[in-house]
Image (cartoon, rainbow, N blue to C red; front, side, top):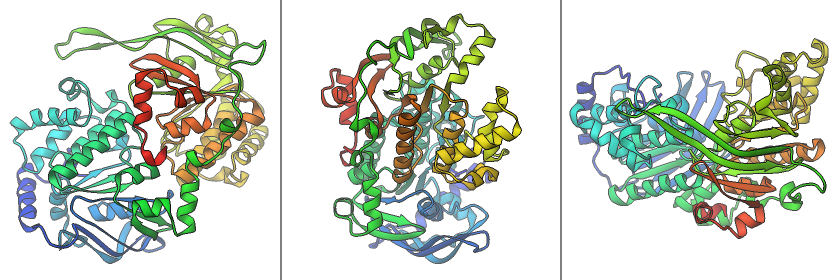
Length: 566
């Protein structure tokens, strides 16, 4: 965990603040680049695994440089090397890293602690593990200010609330007193971004900073980074798999593959006229450049004479909370929506974080009891079912979660993970379940021999394939896909989308697809429902919603899509 997000620092606040001042005094503006990485080589396991080889690039003051590439290409390892945050099993074998003319890859840990957060900010990728679950988010921002001597403990809280507002958090005074688990994934990412820029650092390293954010919040966050660059000359190293963001926001792009830089140069040149086959392959994997099943053949609103698989009418979900004074109040997460999912179609639900997308999906799957309204699945009112009846019905709908790293048990083999639903429902004997698991792994593009492996041995895309195989184990009619590709790079994302389309055609599956990535939604969907503040403001075919939007909010969403992804 980075020093900017960890409140349990081993050095006292006073000593760390003094060290920060000393580093700031020694770090003076130089005529050269702000960051200069030369011939960097990093390995894991005492040199057994070469992760980064001969990587060189520079970042000027006020410049945004994007590092792009597939998972495992060395992007994050390179970024963590700059911060001195490589894990214990990793080491820098050769090369140099200079910050503002001063070599920093050989600094002692005390000096690095002063550098991190004060002069170099980090926005880590996963907000779930990067925030202290026992501390209020306001305290975590305030701690960064106090540790680096930017505020006293008495004044840090007020500034922390301001930073939350600047990061796009509504009602920051109230939200500052909440804990990370009370925030959505996108809201937690905004907190991390607030921590990173709290001390107005000269360089921000942003490791997939917007992968968990919807397009409007993504635009707000990136606009804020642009303001920092303009106001304070802050530079940004943007590690991302979103080529649209890289094209729109970065002046230069560094393309990495298998630990090496394969191409670099101005964004307009690299992303419009790539010289290397690998770069061209990345660009050709973008959803906007591919033809999925949905773009080639849209299904009608309903099969002639048929009935929808899922019908939701007047769905309401209210949560009881308390304000700062301890008074009870009601928060309406979903406010009386109607939805239908037809057999064999993909209905996508889009909207900002907190719009009610996931809560709606949980009610459809009977994981959340509606405050009002009804959900019918294949003509059966799910609210009228007894627990045993509901359990049997749940065989017919399954879910693929957003985070493939957190949704698979690290203790079980892949075969056991896929077998688990069958075992829970008493389907088949041990041999039959193992054979079925092997068949499902092969169905999602993994060898059956992978069944003996653990999730930790797989890439993110492979883990998501296992999650899909598990969802298919009970032969469901409906699969809920909750941001299933947001954590994946573009080539793996394309593979998973192709897999979902192929499975839908061959098995007749219906999908409820939740996503903030409108380019993915356009590629995979038959119909789209747009949610805002717990209400469906527009629903229609992909062509109608994307080409002829009727609601101002839909137009706002579409306008926020990065131009490079359009």
